[in-house]
Each structure stands twice: as structure tokens, then as C-alpha cells.
Image (cartoon, rainbow, N blue to C red; front, side):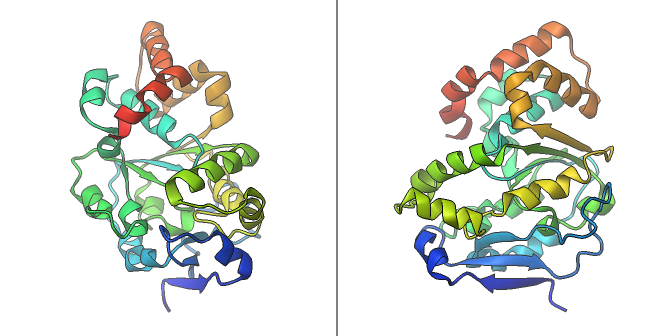
Length: 275
């Protein structure tokens, strides 16, 4: 049996939101989900989330699925526009002795590699899967893939996983602007929103993506965060994250990190984080 099933998205609405940057889109389904974790049992009656990706992803799906995972890995997993960059910077600094100097010298895209990026961007000049394979351990790895499409060894090796969730209404607003500026979508907003509701846009659906990780939130190797809590009470999030990582920092050190992670500072640093 094939590992994945690919369902082309060919409806009129699907075609209306497809853009040349992405190319034709497909639903990607894992055929055998029996080895996926079920956590608290809340996902028993539902299939794990599939994912809308482009056809180019087919060339890399098996390689990602069969990636060698190490116990000292740290995976940052989110749906798009759900606090990914914020979480990456926070977790990397907490896990690396608050080394602001090194963080300023090494771009975030190299400190926490987006594993499936080159699989989705045919013109990208590097293979991000190979970059992850070649990373010095312990590795920090970012992904927007749902549970079913992530490396299967995640569920046996059980490295640290940090998941950040966000209110779907806020995600959709942010993702619409992202799709316009980064993907080149020029159609009406209402068409995009209808496509989101029908799971016809890249990386959708978001809610099942989040529910799969919510079901395993109590596993000792999983830290489940909320974008809204990071905005409302970052101090509490930093305390939880430090404990999860087995790190101990003074109140003054965490206050400095909270300032570093403030919206104003992160906005001003956003270009330097990725240049």
C-alpha cells in the first residue's frame, strides 16, 4: 500500500485561490494512521488531519516521513500564522542559555530550520530537508505539517515538541495578508475566506491540525502553548517553557527575555531574524 494518497483540488473555488507561486494543490492523506499517538483519546472517532500542499511536495513526502529523529531534537510545530517565529525565538534562547549574542549572529532560519520549505518552493536553491539532516545536534526544527505528515519516528523516539495554537479567526486574517504578500494571491477576500472554510488553501485545515496536538498535550515530551497566552501573560509562558526544557533562570533573566520577545522588539527585529 502506498504511504500517501494525493487528491487534486480542481473545483472552481480551488482554482480561484490557486496562485503560480504554489502551483496546483493537492490534499495529502497518510493511508496508515495506526501508529499515530492518540493521547487523551479525544481523536478516536476522527481521522488525523490531512494537509493541503502543492504537487511538488510529492517528491519529498517520503523523505520527510522517513527522516531520522533524535531524542535531543526540539520540534516547533504550528499551523501557519500561529506565533511560529515568536515561539522559535523564545524556545531557542531558553534552550541555549539565553545567548543573545549568538542569536544576533545566526539568522533564525538557520537556528531553527523550516524542514519542508524547499519541498514547497521549487525554485529555492537549498534542500531544507538535507540541511536538517546535516544540522549539528541538538537540532531545532520548525514545521507547519500536521501530525500525520511529520516523521514517523517522532512518535517512537519522542523528542521534545513545542506546539503553539492560535484563535482561528485571527489566524485567517493574518494568513489572508500573508497569502497576498508572500504567495501572490490577488483575488477577493471573500473568495479566500470561502476557500479556507472548504480547506482549499495551503496548509489547511487548521483546526484538526491543532486538535491532533491538543489530544497529546499531556504527554511529557509535548509543550502546548497558546498565542493568546503569550500576548497576555508571557511571564507565565516563559516559566512553563523553562521547566519543560529543564532550564532554570532568575526572575531578572526572564524579565529581560520577556522584553526581548515583546511585540515592539520582535517587530523591529523581524527583518534581521530572517535576512
